[in-house]
Amino acid sequence: MTGRLVVVSGPSGVGKGTVIAELLRRRPDLWLSVSTTTRPPRPGEQDGREYFFVSEEEFNQIVDDGGFLEWARYAGNLYGTQKQPVTQRTNSGTSVLLEIDLAGARQIRRNDPDALLVFISPPDEEELARRLRGRGTETSDVTKDRLARAKDEIAASSEFDRVLVNSEVSATADQLLAWCESSGV
Ligand code: 5GP
Image 1 (cartoon, rainbow, N blue to C red):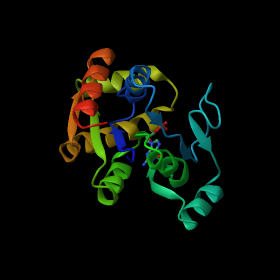
Image 2: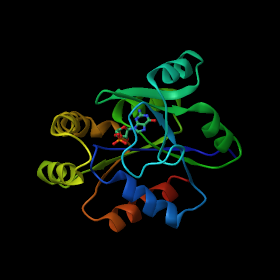
Image 3: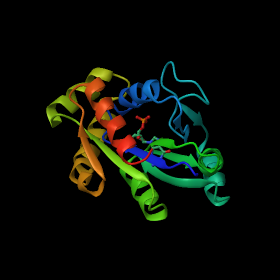
């Protein structure tokens, strides 16, 4: 049996990464895809672990070679999911988690009707703003840009198969797990 794609999307700062880490602890058989980006690494991020960090030139070369399953520009940087490692897993029966933005989720939806799409939503906008500022990894302009984008993303959440409000990480991970399992993943 081939593995499925599970797309996890949601505004920057909503806590997608923490929810996914919790899901992976409970379901180590799932594989989290490592995206490729032109964004510079944040302190503590390692090439090949959080992302493959590449130049814009290298990124465009992969685009020209048809190497991306999906890609998008987000807050001034390029982000994409490389096809080969993902299809290698799904072909051998492993389901793959993609933590990607709204534009990427839409591309997956168009190309793969079997994909499951979940949107992680903040309890409210103030909480999201607080988390984004508290993270302190971006300049205030970048934070503003990400907050503006969050509003558009939240407005499109009805396009997803499931919306989970992340008030508490372990409860959200439970809901995500239950939903994956009820969908046959
Ligand atoms: P960050 O810079 O905070 O790591 O990520 C910014 C946004 O890019 C997040 O919403 C994240 O989900 C999204 N993102 C990360 N990897 C990919 C990818 O491969 N494709 C797309 N379309 N978005 C991605």
